[in-house]
Length: 224
Image 1 (cartoon, rainbow, N blue to C red):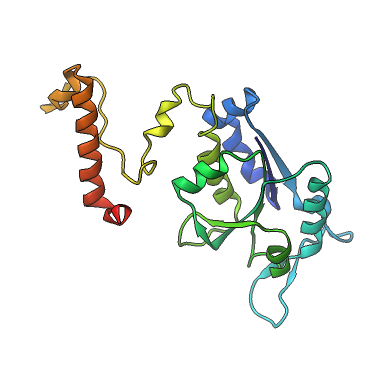
Image 2 (tube, rainbow, N blue to C red):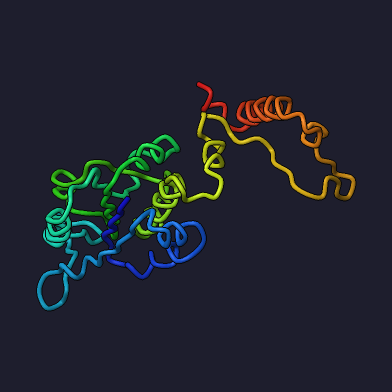
């Protein structure tokens, strides 16, 4: 998989890909992540990428021309399955969406900034608009990092135990059951006996029951 991220703040996105699972995935060659500074495609001597919005109003808007130049340059070299725009008014990211995107080969992610992008960018280039929640960030960079993490960890070979991702919260519209590790007793708090029994069918049944119970208590909307 290859992910190209277009941003005015590439330095904000470097660190998430230089540690832990994402770093290992890149080093293994399981994914390529390329950051593109929109200012490299800017206009004039001042590297302009934004301007005031027509009709007045507070806040600057990312211009269509630099974005067009960047996306068009990328598309000269390969076909892209999706061109994603990170925006608060997009479709809220969920596990099913991450599962679907993890099957793609090439993705472009455009990070919004200021008051967003010229609407013509969304009309001409964008195939999917994604939000990570009903709140506003300073830009789309952190949201893009969240999206990338949720996708890359699903790629075959990224996690040491590939079954781990299959039992994550939301994979089957259930929250994950409680988990425990050593010691089996700590200050009077004990691990459920069934988890120490070695009876794996009973353990799986317990986990399913606990997952359902937790979902009913915390996120009943997932069961509808």
